[in-house]
Length: 198
Image 1 (cartoon, rainbow, N blue to C red):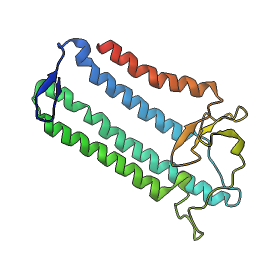
Image 2 (tube, rainbow, N blue to C red):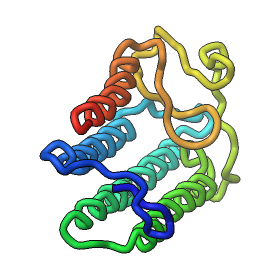
Image 3 (cartoon, one colour):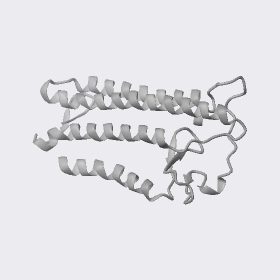
């Protein structure tokens, strides 16, 4: 059922095994997605600063570990959040309370991601592993592979995932067919789940 903030039911659907299985399927998809993201973090191409190779490797390891831990924590919170609708099938939950819990969880995840990005920096550039100045930009000679400055397209690079040029996190090497296969699957699976539950 769909509620307004006042607790008024605005839409509903007849219960069936498909509607009952909708949220468990969503949880399984999310769990698989978060595990997949952690695999990406572990296997993505490691960027190294030629001027400070040892320091940049240490920074990159810390960067990956922090984001991996964040994905585990935030992923667990999101999966648990989807238990609320399932519990409401058995025990009525005030829609306003569900709304507040959802906003708190989303807020914690968004703020946490922002703080982690600021404190850690891309590739761990703001992590102080030595006494040298942190936050410096790595020397990279790959401008020609960044289309519009955002999309990485390098057929000669075997890596499927690379660190983003701007911001924090990872992106795809769009020259690799494997990259497109994963993107299509990530988009297709939720659609199939929705069709199954309809």
